Length: 138
Image 1: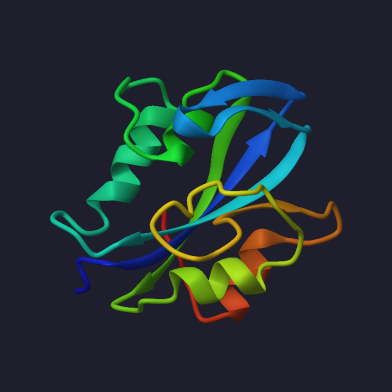
Image 2: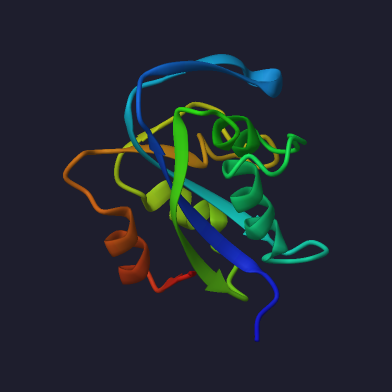
């Protein structure tokens, strides 16, 4: 069983909100669906996804990554997780996701425009990510 790889989080923002995101500053998020692409190759591997889930449920307060600031808001919910075990595809998937990148979000350690994408209403993140080879993580 894989302990790490790449993952895609499907995040719902229920109402338009403005959030302070670490060094990026205040960002306005329109209501809608967002897809965040991250990697989990460090210590603990996919335990990072469990940490994101805990933060989204309000069971954790510490913010380490840009996505933590988004997941820690009452206006947001973590709807689904798709994993790509043992695959280093973070930048590839972030660039290929349909939608509008949120400038700089989640991409402070690479040359990508962003790792958070505002997904058009007519696109299904789960469908897209599984078609790209991912597995839905319950």
